[in-house]
Length: 423
Image 1 (tube, helix red, strand yellow):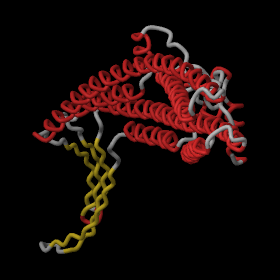
Image 2: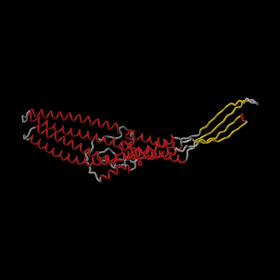
Image 3: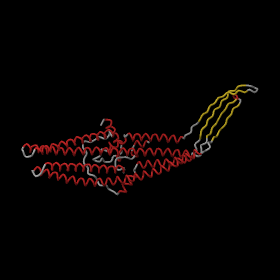
Image 4: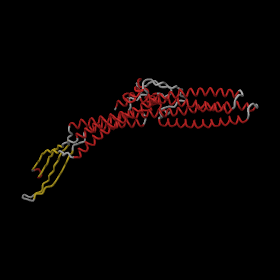
């Protein structure tokens, strides 16, 4: 990692309050790096700019859509009747449409609703970035775990091939078994090379996507934890903290305000003006005021009906999002529980097959079995152990995803962000 990234992490860690830095999990990247990566994400930066844009729009709504209009005119009058003459005349006028008081309040509410929606959208961007980081992190862990397992299998077969080579030289084993051992070692070496390539790809993807996260040399193997609490408690926590649902609710609220604003627009805003004229080269001076009021028509009624329909549509979308979020939360909880149960079964199978492979190899070393049986037993044990490792990582990822969506992992709350307080 370059010096700028290191300095960014150090400065961010110093600025964060103690409550914003929970203890780092052993199989996750350090929290300070994660929070720095989340806040520096382009999606989050874009959401910050969107907040600024909504604040500017709120100021515009507060100021209103109308401005003063200045009118200037000059003309020349020619009079043919006696006395005949030419006169220079001019006029100046100032006019402005006045927004009715109730509309001003609704415009201010619309501005505040836009800012609230943008801030919720920022939280959604942070959360989605956290989901992406978590998924890419465990993709890399899975590929690294596969490399370790294939490397272990290669070392076992290499050791076995060396022992068999000595036995063949002493005439204690047929040359066919040596060919079988060499073939098995070559296959595993090829699988190891492919696994290392996939691990490098996963690591590079993670580094490019989240450059502030430093990949460690090793990550400890942590057994999956049991999920505490009832399903309904987890579902409620996830739904309460779901940013997508919060965005839908904010948009629905803004649509309702917009419907009220469109309904208020059915009563037109009046325009007031003042006019000063100089006629007949100053012989006549005029001062007047004007009032104009548009006559409402079917167009305003149609706009109001359309805004009301949009508000109802937003309410339906909000209900749909809530149903989907509740279903996804329930599925996530069940998946986390099932993943841990699956790992327990895979671990038992891997332990049993490992013992079987050891006994089969022991029998072959004592001359009571064939090499083909030993290689098959070792392959099954390797596959079972690899499956157990993948199941362990799947269970850990599901556990942390459950914690992340319930806002019990990392600092995803905007109120703890110093830069958000400035907004």
